[in-house]
Image 1 (cartoon, chains in turn cyan, orange):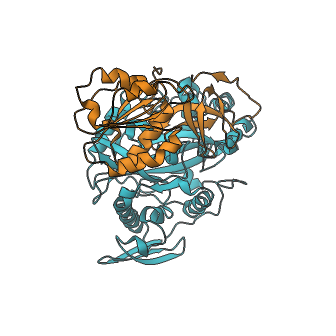
Image 2: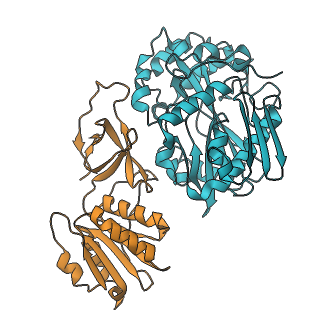
Image 3: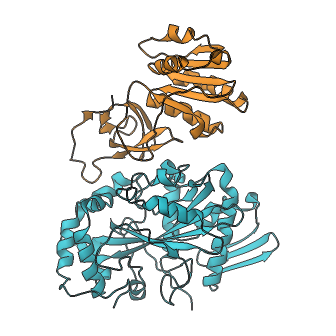
Length: 346
Length: 198
């Protein structure tokens, strides 16, 4: 049985919604009633059936609509997808990884057949059936990274490893939480994280870099990150901040449940076999407050996390303007009773 | 000296004579003083293999002081844009072992480094020393236009007109600080403009 792909939008009339099954599988990012940065990296291994970890590259009911939104972003601004000249081989590595994983997890939707360098890729949800020569860019309509990431949910950064550091040298970034690939491309790990408050002082990035530069082939790792977004908008880029920023001033006690979304990034890290690069998929999951609070444990916990978040973090995540309205709304769903350990709903 | 800031913001040092036979200096305005100061610490004959490209700026000072160092080549340029074709050719024809020294305003150092990076020179091998104005080169993240010599916070984008927060986040590849709309959430909020990058 295949996935039923929703027809929905992430802009204008914002018809994005999660089905009840997708609410239950939402990767809620708080394992306790408070939040602070940590190097929360763990092995990226397959998780329970029905969770977002059932497959290492997750495809869900939003796949087709997300790919349509990505195409719109790229038509407006092609600089969201860039690859420095030395990164083409890593692009082929990524194409192989994503085709293999999607075909493995969802054989009813994707098929990859290989005859030496001659590959055939069938993507049924998007109506694609292409035959090409692996390693020969002239046989694809785009570069290998752009070709496959126009068919894969989430943003993708490809990091080159040299001089004991990781360099952001290629990426497809259209669903980002307010950072610019066009500005950050070519930067090293510390430089592109420079604007993040508090974490440098805690030594987070030094430890994270040490971990990431030691990732081995076939042993990917993952972590969760989160922020909040007003309206289910995937493209919250700095490029368009002057267009979506005003949304943050539209939150009222009446519309919080519909407008405010928890935005969770499932970030994973994979060593690429030929280029020795690291690919860093940043998969974005959105859930509106009305959907999230159908799970009473999540409602109670989110209330406590947002209420107690240090101001610096609230500001960095862009919550400051509507945090009081959100906390007040969530407080009515928090009876003060304890929450069970772990991420999942009760 | 620039105040302590975030990690992507460039850190400048003090020029010091590097081992090697070929030395290329690029400086503007008071950057000349960094070269003169370094010359006092350089071994005899150091400038026999040196080229100095100098943009004096509106003051027109320090030319004689640099000529007095008797570099193998001395070139005076009216602007960075006018120096660019020569600089690109010099770097394209340079042999392994050329040492690069940049001194003066942040805009000059950043733009010269951008050309050097494109020529394949590693940024950590380049000697830099900041002298003179703290005015910033800023890229508007919205329209991508570059505004030169930004001295205020916030600053108006010379291209699209948005009022921008001038961040400390810096890209060597773009050779600019990032400007992000400061009142995107409510355009009626107009924070006062202060002159802070002098």
